[in-house]
Structure formats: C-alpha cells, structure tokens
Image 1 (spheres, rainbow, N blue to C red):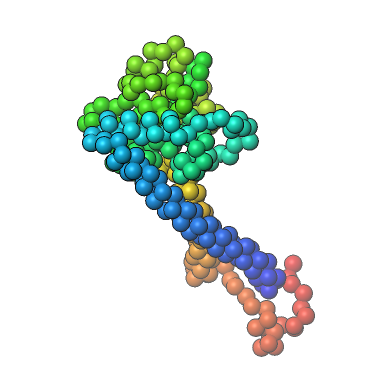
Image 2 (image 1 turned 90 degrees about the vertical axis):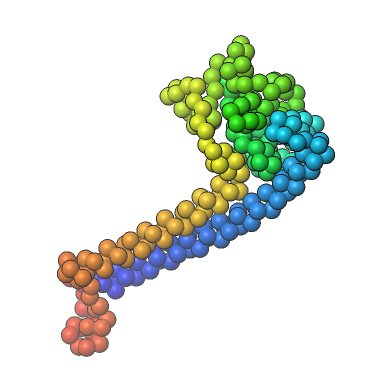
Length: 258
C-alpha cells in the first residue's frame, strides 16, 4: 500500500515541478521582453521631448501627446478577437497602430519614462473612450487624449470633461471589461507607481508567471512540512513494505491490508 501511494505521488510531484520550472522560465522570458520594450520606449520618449525642446511638465505632456497623434492611428485594425492583455507601448510605437486604449497605454509609459505621472481614465456614456490623466504640476491634473482624431483636443481637467453630454461616468480600472459597471460609478483611484506598471503587459505576465511558480512551490513545501509534522507527532506512520520484505518481516507478494 505504501509503495502504491508513493508511486501515485511521484507523477504528481513531477507535474508540480514541471509547472514551477515552466512558470519560472516564462517569467524570465517576459522580464527580458519587458526590459527591451522599456529601453525602446524610454529612448523614443526622450527623443520626442528633446526635439520639442520641452522644459516643463506641461510642454512634455503636449510633446508626447502630439507625437502619438501624428504617429499612431486605428485605420485597418479589427474590432473583434483582441487579447485580454493588449499590445504593449513598444508594439504600438513600432507598428503605428492602436485604438484609444493602446495609445493611452503608450502615453502613460512614455510619460513615466520622462518623469511624469499619468494613469488611464476610462470614460463612458453614449460614447466610450480611453484617455490619460497626467500630473503637470504639484496639484494640477489634466486629461490627455492622444488619439487621432482626438475627442478631447486640449488639456482639460476631468471635471470639465465630464460636462460633455457624451460622457456620464469614469473609472480608473476598466470596470466594463470586468463586468462590474453595475457595482460602482465615478471611481478614480490613484495607483501611484502601479499606474505605469499595469500598462506593461510583459511586466504583468512576468509577475503572474513568478507568482504561479511561488504558489506551486509553496504548496509542495507546505504539504511536505505538514506530513513531516504529523509523522513527528505520531499521528501518521510511514511504512516501507519493500524494506520490511527485505528484512523478512512480511512476504514480498503480500497483498495490501484492506
């Protein structure tokens, strides 16, 4: 019986070990992709700011916004079959293609590269739109629409944008994709440093891969620890039928106890 139980445990351990290894390798791969994309986006953002001779936050925001309006559009892009984790900022910049959410993601990551805090704002109502909210001063926040054509041409505070008849709600997290718009309205959360991190698909994927590896490894370790504690306290007994048979204490072919 003990040998049978051990034989059954070995494939499970092998599968768990394979999951840990695969998740860890996947996490490393996604981390390397994120590193390369971050370098590319940082180089583009700094070049744009330098060529625009932007010396303050407002000028840098306008320079990045205008660059994206000029270089990215949604012409020819499909509306269906898009992945849950959208294209990263580097992919959008390289391809020159993206919807309002993709352009906003690129703006948030580019703004972070030049020292400007920004985060996504989802606008809803008779029209659905995604924009960014950027900090251009100690206490000033403005809505930035980097889409082409833009629904919001100039830099405006959120409360001004909400006076438009086409918008009646806003939220930082995309509650529509999460099917939670019925639960809360007018939700804006300052995510701080996470606002840029959440706009990096490779970084999110790397985190999930490493988290999976840690959880599975922890489950394996916890199971082994529990078995050791139970055995130490005498609540369970581990027998080795093969060893007993070699010592002549039980027949080799003795059936397991029922």
